[in-house]
Image (tube, rainbow, N blue to C red; front, side, top):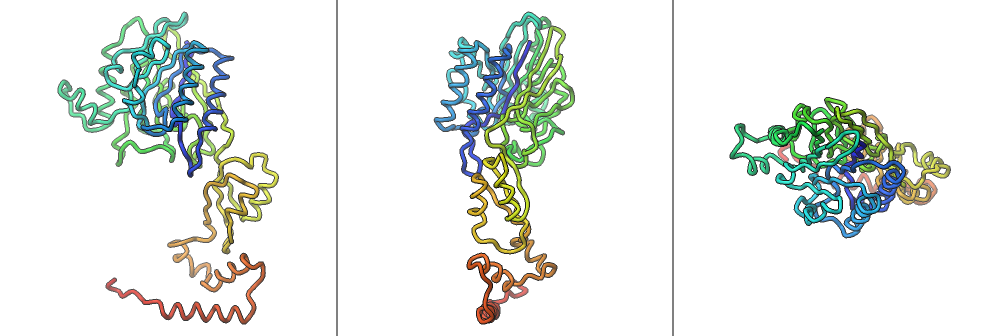
Length: 389
């Protein structure tokens, strides 16, 4: 049986106030094109289909189109679970009626205990159990009365839920789990929303050892944890500059009647990659003039040690999608105060830099003396904080 495992689409996401919906549409088109040439038995989306619980209309329309093409036109069933970004109730609306069309949405505990069973000639009957995103309180309210242990952590909650699902196993079936959680020891990315604070959101992979494959969502970097068959597919595309070197895509999984066989990461590429460009402004501009991917979404780190007038405007003449600018060379704010003695750059030095940027010429001697006098007077007139303050 061939399984396409994907997760964390975050449809409707904005990055630095720029909508990523067109990029998401382009990447999903690549996924559908892959399915057209390489049919699979089922497509799994392991949570965070949308970026927020009340998604924008355009994001809903995109998902509707993707489901139509995969389920209706390609006749491939899809199984979706809700993630921490999704509104579980909204996502699950009409789920019972959609099953007949091949769309299975698992967003509550009742549906979690009823597997989606799909048959293939190679693997026989395969039972897919969806464990939607949950927190300890939800599990405690749902199963606390019948549980023999207290449920105060995500780990305890997932241990109990995994046991509940394992009780439903049939010896004639292979079993696949779909879960949206943070497996302890896995690598996180800066674009993920924390599930809790202080590490209490971590879940042991050992709760999942009884399954033939575990399709995980939430962490955005493709990876396995504990066993080859316990895997994160990673997010659909890059959602932070910290992910610039990650290979995004989906996981193609193969299982037979003995269980897990293999997993392969298939890359997808977005029209705009997220990259970090570093250097002095003239170097960056020169590089941008010949950069074949000059329309990527960029974080630019300027290493210049002098003030620059309208740096964003200048950079966008060659890199139109500079979304964030850092100036570590300037050591702005607290770092500048701490390093002032080392750099020996006074307020007057900074003003001279600014004047050159603004007027394309240096201060005359008279101007320099006048500005130095103004800065001195301002310094003398600035009230000093007492030790008590």
